Image (cartoon, rainbow, N blue to C red; front, side, top):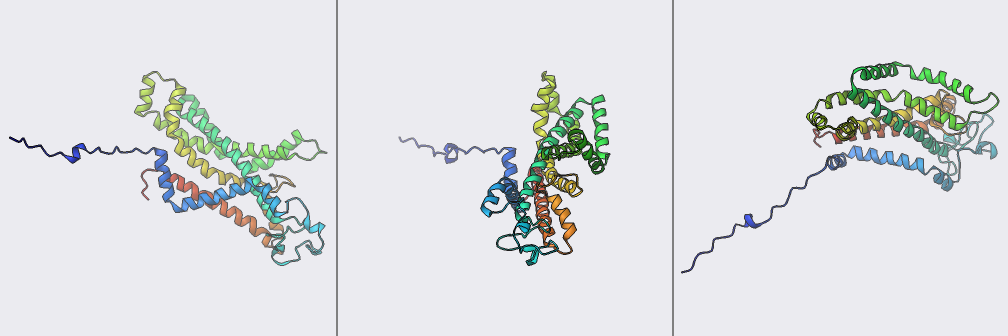
Length: 330
């Protein structure tokens, strides 16, 4: 007698593929790649950084530098009033963006090196601002009590302080303390002073934001569980709180950098930023306001460059914020 063989269940013997989990960083990257505006803004920002880093190479290939007074050394480039002889600010195959009225320096290399100057100061100030804001914000929120009250009052004072007026008054004091009257102010002193001033007046917003985040997180179950198991305050901060704060830190830092670039240019425009002969966007704006009635071209190039940079970085910051938010569907 033949015993019938039971039919095999294909579904029972076929291995079921395991679901592959995706990390929060992977999910953020996937959401960011779907945002065409954010990707385009990131490419524009990357181009600005690439130009800033490659400024000496660009100057070498271009054959011009931002310091030589071409208009005064070469006859026929400037008229008797100091303005470019050729139309559109002297734009030509030799000078792509024209020449500066008066001194006759090349505008293109001034703009390229100006990007380098502004980004260097802004990046250093952004890093220091983020570090200071993170430390004070977490300490205030986690410690609470008198520490929180003291840091909160300092934050209120910094946010209400007239930063521009203080900087205008502070710069001459620094120069009188470190530079003798018969010496020229060193470039490094101006750069360091700008970084210190920008950092001193920029950390408070991030610190207040993180303080509020920590006040909420420290009452959560995972933080209480870490305390019950005997974790030290440092371990709670670095292992439990800080990983949950990377999103606001990254977003605020992304939005802070263009604001500091603009602030550095504004201080140079007011005469308390970088000094000659260091190329700087703010000083280009200042010179442009003096000659725009006769040479509007000189004002257009730094204006367009700063506008494109700020818009691109703000769009990038918005895209990063949206990518970190899991509630947003794209």
